Image (tube, rainbow over all chains, first blue to last red; front, top):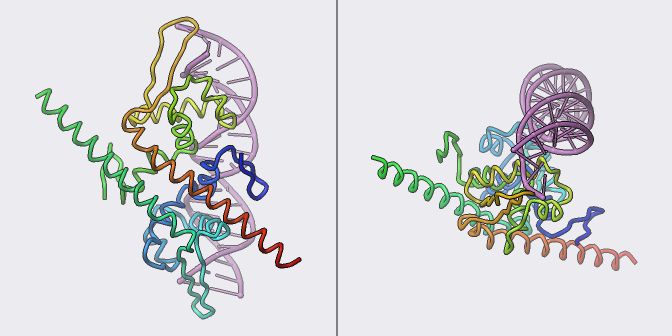
Length: 120
Length: 120
DNA sequence: CGGCATCCCACGAGATACTG
DNA sequence: CAGTATCTCGTGGGATGCCG
């Protein structure tokens, strides 16, 4: 049992999910992997996420200390998003998850092809 | 770009999320870590998940070949859930995620305590 | 016991318009 | 450009009841 910011979690997995389980969060983090990105660049990278959602998720990631928000006081405005040190510690894990998905797809595709050959 | 079961994913991370990004999925997998569990045992392990949701997520995990469902034809019914070999390959990754959450909580808590001491 | 089926509501999320 | 604010709608998911 973990207590964290007035929330109780039965195991640290739940805490992890609360932090990066949001619908687009890990995808956002993943896109900030090596490059700092401007808001508009993130939008282009994630076209399926609406602006409202993107802003919302970014704010949460910022509040949780995973993403850093750098505001340039100028006109027109410019805001850059990057990973904090804490955020960067997630990258190797996300890379593994990404790789896992790749392997999964490869295996299933292979199996389906084999099944096809069998029935032919 | 990955195509998988009529769905298109821009990167394998999206595919991974489609498979285990569901609200409770990784938690379910995590609870099936070493033990096979009956439906009612899973319910007790995850009290915050309603029966409907649990069933739904389990079906999806089953269809994706991550969880195995074993039905004992008897009265009263008995159904056991366990991880498939594919599902088991997720365990090390989930363990890392879990550990990450733990570290995160520890660090934040530590930082907040230090900040307290400073102001005192 | 381990589910579906149904009903129903809250809230997540889209669309649009406006601002520093 | 990078947001907020508001309004609205669809649906995710809760509650309940029934069945093999």
